[in-house]
Length: 321
Image 1 (cartoon, rainbow, N blue to C red):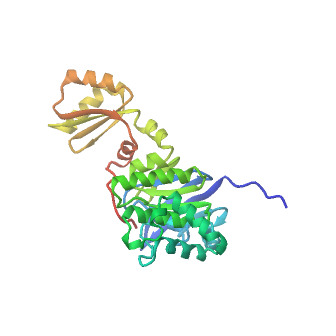
Image 2 (cartoon, rainbow, N blue to C red):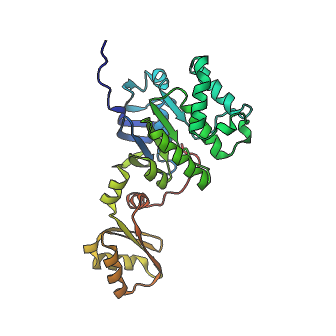
Image 3 (cartoon, rainbow, N blue to C red):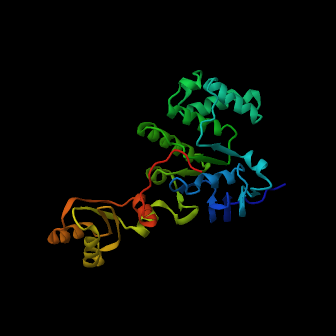
């Protein structure tokens, strides 16, 4: 029998709601994740990112709305969905008393891989995640970065159609984080669909094809990272560390240079001016000579979009509800 067309949508969420103790921690969000892309849920602690992915892989029941994963209903068909998922949660659930190889082998048997195929599959994945040299090391002896790479390798054992990564680099040092990003890009090249939660703006920019920005259970914006920067901020940001009366200077400067600005934001004594004419703005600004501790003209980033949309910085956090 000839198979029908493969659906482009891996996840479809419509007006998705999750209540905890009478409070909506996910408050009517809608989004779609397409086959082969890395889709990000970006937001601070408490935004509802982890709760959303728990509904996707069936760990948390849906309070209201609709959610389909791989064409299956996330409520009534969660067991079937999980067969086709790879999940890396925030918590380390590796067995510390077993070796790297034994952790992988135990998972392979859980998924019913044929014994004749297990060794080849494990070698392939350990090589992918640069763990071959540690195959016989006990998990408790591994660094934090190696444990995260092992968790990801283990999640790929069943050749998942969808890989869910919940804050994959939280707690890692910068070197380990960058190494893991490199390996996740290699996984992306295999056309595995990835659903990623993160509070690291650089991580979202480097890995995500599209993303949503979440705050307090709601989606504030959706799109490609570069497109969101262009839409909300423009190509450049001029930072001014003001010495005196920042609100008055914000009003004066945004009025005087409205023709060069796409917006502004004041955080403490730092004024962010969003512009597509940074050099001209800086030149004209010097004629007014506002009292500044410092000034910095730089390229706009996703962090500027988040700051403009939420009015707050995105601080790292270890665990989210």
